[in-house]
Amino acid sequence: MTNGSQKIVALVDGSIYSASVCEHAAWIARRTDAPVELIHVLGRREAAGNHDHSGAIALGARTALLEELAALDAQRARLISHRGRAILEDAAKLLEEAGVSDVTTRLRHGDIVEAVAELEGDARVILIGKRGEAADFARGHLGSNLERIVRASHKPVLVASRAFRPISRVLVAYDGGASAMKAVDHIAHSPLFQGLLVQVVTVGNAAPEVTKGLADAQALLKAAGLAVETSVLPGQPETALGKLVDEAQFDMLVMGAYGHSRIRSLIIGSTTTAMIRACKVPVLLMR
Image (tube, rainbow, N blue to C red):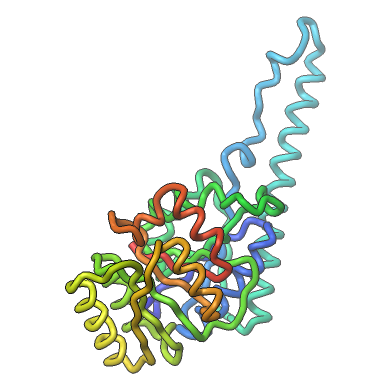
């Protein structure tokens, strides 16, 4: 998030999380002067209107019936496409009302992960809602595409919470690994975090190298002009971090997305799901 020419790629799907994705995108755009590209992806099943109904038609059925079914398929595909454009228009209007003037929209067909891979080259961040359209009322369910995108993307992924709230306090989960140091360096060099309070936290018993890493992280962030604190928390990351976010009223969690330590392995498997589900604030995941 350092190059002003890089865009914010925001994925909107018509779910209740789409408004939050737009508001988070607007917040980033206002702080970084970055353009926003809104993407709506029509899955292959949605986009395809040419189903083969021949096996469902009794022998001797009139050709007209097959033609009528084909016409209905084509009509459905058109309606889904129109709906996708309407979702993009609504999202663009939200951003414009939030003061973001440089907004583009794109309707894509196919697999969402493939679409992100094609579009992320000049992106500074990928925004996605915590849950997708099919999971609006399933509190325990994370969007099926979320983990796939996090695993595949080479850019930071911001998982938007259900509702946007102003961001002033940022918690960084630090374990001394490469992606944690990259996250700290990213924060130090990005205009997005200027003026925010940053706390860098290690969970568990801090080994000497981790303690030194915390001190190095603090020095780097202070040199960038940020107000920064560090601390070591006892316990397990998935419970300790979630509890700290709630009790200290942090507005964003930043963490590395991959690795073998307890913090970074949160992003793989059920522990990750539990962490992101429990966190009521946006989570920025760094490779």
